[in-house]
Image 1: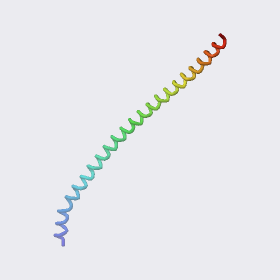
Image 2: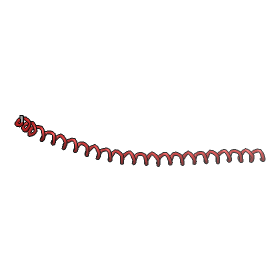
Image 3: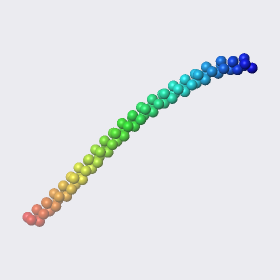
Image 4: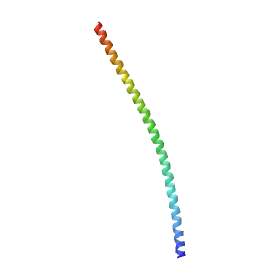
Length: 83
């Protein structure tokens, strides 16, 4: 019985240790990939925010141009009426 237990321990223990090492290595690789992915997502979020700000600035400028164009049309109309 003791010999069987010793034999199993000699055969199984190294395999268990090898599996644990592989699991640890896979865990570290996963953590590394997760950190890289998080950095990429943060960079994408920052870019999206910059792009959104640029779009909003452009829309505000277009609105200002439109308002200015409306004022010019009103002034031109008044000038034509006065002439």
